[in-house]
Length: 315
Image 1 (tube, rainbow, N blue to C red):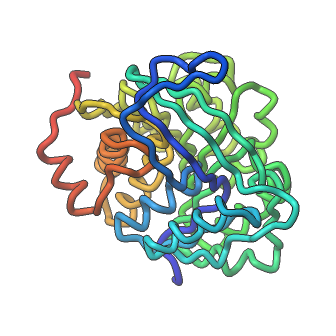
Image 2 (cartoon, rainbow, N blue to C red):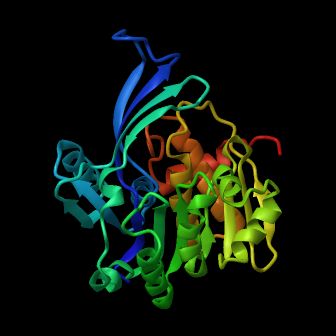
């Protein structure tokens, strides 16, 4: 296959600052320790981490004719990512965010949806972008033009071609469930945060939520639990939880998106589900040690070494 990892969906330019205690009133100024820029989003972060972990990666999404888009594409290419799947759109800005992180890890953000809501992958491109071992769809719920039938058709093609499929979402209420339902029948691994799973289902029990999504077609559910680690359940009945690594957190921006690429890398390296989740957790933990999505992730050997030497939180 041409690629190991294709990441489709939400690509955003982020400007991040850390740490803040409050947003100053009026025209006031607050002094902070660090400011950086990053390519983020459920697809963008995953693409970069996949490339850092050694996967041949294709980026598929949209960006605008602006400085943010130019920088984001250049940044992706600096990691060896094939950006030929990115569409430059006229009349809409690049999806962009201003993210301010507090010392407690909470991060208020201002966001322009921009190109994420406008790009549309034509069916004529389906075979090219599904020429991959793992096909990741990141940002269901934000992709206005692709959500629903277009994403379902694209995911069906990926499954028909034998791809392992993973899905991440941006969901805040049951109103987002139809867009999720459209792709679940073609999803091997459904990977929302626990907060998103709760918002979609109205449930709180992890097993009940996993059953809810698997009854709609998902092959397995992995819920990211923030500082409490991750939960896994699949159709074979395999169920487990993996605790988070014990680290000093700087910024949690993009940790769930990093998890997606870490998990895919584990699968592609022949790891068990348990070890694949551990690799995903290690990748997320490293991300949280720096400012900006994927900041702390360096390489697969580095991440594997971190897995062996860093302790995990008590379950």
